[in-house]
Length: 383
Image 1 (cartoon, helix red, strand yellow):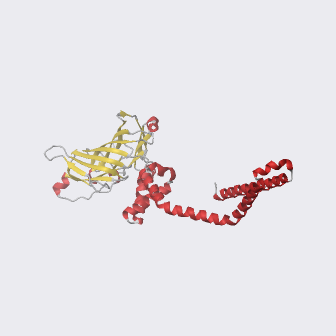
Image 2 (cartoon, rainbow, N blue to C red):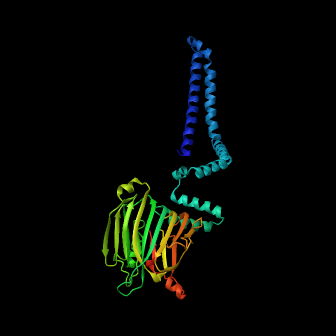
Image 3 (cartoon, rainbow, N blue to C red):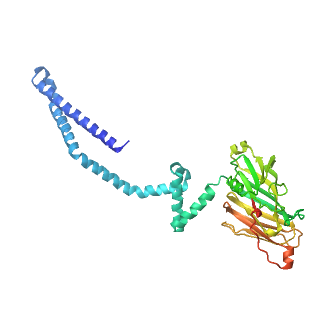
């Protein structure tokens, strides 16, 4: 209710009370005067109605006059008193509100819009970093990558195995078969998962916008690398909490797509499930580079590369990932027959975080030739 309306009601009440007092006082004085002139009503004089009426009349008249002259001053005094109370209590109110929002996020959720939350987060980060511009840019970067991500992955375990392939019948570079197994926990947001491989750049850019429903690979068209061929890319297995799902394949001139139905009931349940999928693809041995990219925010990553069945002499891995904790890299001892490299990353990794494996072939190591990894687009492995 507006303050002006309340003030008008108050003035109306004061006026009514004053008028009633004034009218009652006049009435009692009239009765007392009539009783004085009537012998039968002499007993009325005992009640001093004239005095009471005079008092009520004076009080009503004085109330009206006083309210008229003192009304504005009274409002000013009330406003000053309220301002003084607010000024004295403001620090306590402010501290209580800040502490409440800092401890109980639900309280902040009830009153804050996304824009207000962005402003609060930016201000808090600016205070911690002592640089408002830096804080704003950093927060916007994190917000765009993380807040807009529809899924979050936990405890991702990725196993990659490289195997040498026979030389292709047609002219083309020597190749490695790449078998990749992903396993991670998430709360699904889409019932259908797709895995697409294409050599059409326009189609590739259309498909990569469909995250997380579609995982897309671009394969540069060249001899021995046909994006529409099963030998170039194939989804071998997909399971949810250990239960295999059927896989459907569609083929077109520039590529192929594999579709898996997770199930509407799994999405509607909104509970975490363990996803496992295995696929294979190929990459050129002369590419010397294989990159694993994350499409969603991921907490905890274990990535192992087995290159036992290859002619790779040495393998290196980049550990330049954005994480509060340093990645741990380990290898199988040289006394073993296997060749495997593992990297473990604790904490959160942002979308598009990459781990790159770079190798040197035995023939290059023996000849002492230096080889620079190529930037072939089909040397990237995404989830």
